[in-house]
Length: 508
Image (cartoon, rainbow, N blue to C red; front, side, top):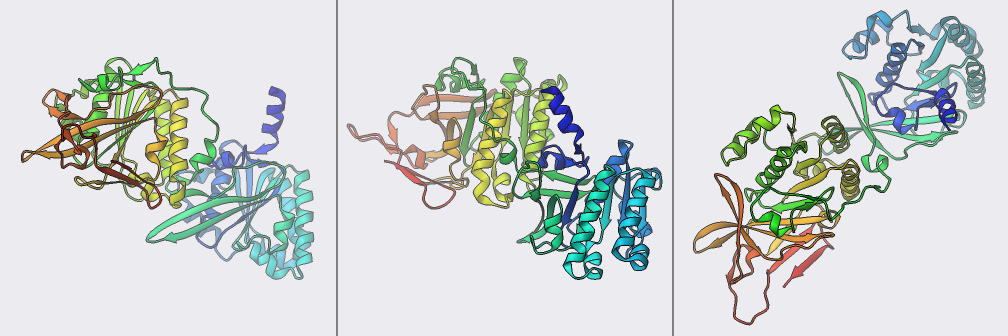
């Protein structure tokens, strides 16, 4: 089996571009002919050049042949702003050649002869032909282009050289090149509302599997960063299960009792509540409790910086600084705008691995939902994230803000999130005798008994505390409780809707 893996690895050409090889299930097949198609500005030239320089880092030689009007000097000037660019590689491991003279003088045959000769002389393992449209304009009818590409494929495969053709045509299957090449990687650049997004999709890959569908990518100073759809990568059912006998305590007086001794380890818990109801404070208490027991914790949020959060917790008796210095607690904050959900998920999993995280508070799912290009994938994305964290022995808390502070309507912005999570804890303000109070209740716990009562939540100088139940009141979850009529059936009076039409329930 190990020999088979080595043979499969040896048959691949690694792109060196983060996560492109993951989408390709190991990389391009060595000696193959591939097409990178995309409109102007979609990132074809940047991606191809980065592959050349990544190959150079592994001592492999590359040949970049241009058929465009842009000079090599101008191209190198543009590339110099990327971290992958190394001037010392130019002319030694990355070779730039213009193909126009040989194409003008010798036609298609002269062009192919020049490519094969130069690949052999340079010992190139990667060939880029930038400007397939020029070839298509000069070689008519289409049969001439097909024969040229077939000859190129055969001759370069014999030299163990992998070839990429760059083309601005994106209509699938309309040209002869789509039938000849071994694979097609389609790039896109779209404007959704005011947000610019880039996409990459493998539409053809002969002789190999791949991760299908559209994935997002960014181009920044690092180069091309590709983010496969998280739910497409994390498709396996988790092997590790939550064991009801193993508990992770909240560290909050009264709340552990409500949950039969704490949360089931490796479970996922949704904490729903209006702004200011105490969601983040409860999460930080959970992290502090675990860190004190030697369980590394991670806070990942979008509203408050680590310094703000540390000071806020210090004011209510939660001492986070010593735990941070010991490496038992890490606070990470990100701007909630122009984010890519798959990029955040990748970063989150990486932090969990690096820190050995056992407890995680994800403070707010709204940025994931708002920035999703396809809102329908949000539920699948969150499910995959929960499963990936459970597989890594993480007990997860997710906070979600509800839109209404008072009243019988309770809207959850993410459809079905309450069904995905193992446990649901609900917080709300309510008014009693002209004074605002907080309440807390455990709506559900999977594989565990829980306290069914509504109780007061107090934020004190010594941390959050859970008080007695309100057995004499009803309809408290509406925020407008009233005295229970003797002998009447208890009622919350609340109606929960989530994500949109078609998902509403009433507890009356």
